[in-house]
Image (cartoon, rainbow, N blue to C red; front, side, top):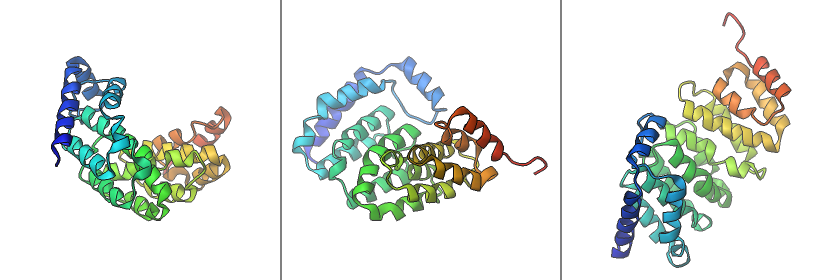
Length: 249
């Protein structure tokens, strides 16, 4: 590792530590149910530090340097440091490819992104553009839906959300959704699936309604409620009733 990357990482961490708010950190840990190691820095302040230290690096650094810097920060396992690293990596999104995809998969599987906020920063904004430019990776994203790792399962859905807004990868989204509806116990996966379906429905609401009615009571209610948020109130009420588990079952 080059000294410049080590030095920059130390400077960034020092800057974030100077902004730490223990009271906020306690509140965030309660919100995330104690699953994060954090210091209490707001996202706008994280983004400001990233911009000040890292904006110009996207003009001069190689992809390898960017990935090395991000892995240096992610390895610290501090919530705000990880978010800054992923904000920075978004600047390189259109330059990343299958080699970096392999590393993203490892980050998720090894719990380097071990909360919904980190997954939602990495996947739509970084992994999504890689998938768009390399659609053959769709089979890999589809396989994540069947993973034993909850973050890979959530990632399989949220990777697609920005692509779906452009009408892309609809078939893949429904293939993934059909797998994820069997996840009855993890609300973060259910919410991710519902988010994906909601965005798919914004492009083609008829197809979304057809999918929901076809799978009916098999769909977790959390997923369903997220998926139908953009429907008119009358259609939401109809779908909630039509997909309800019949009495006595």
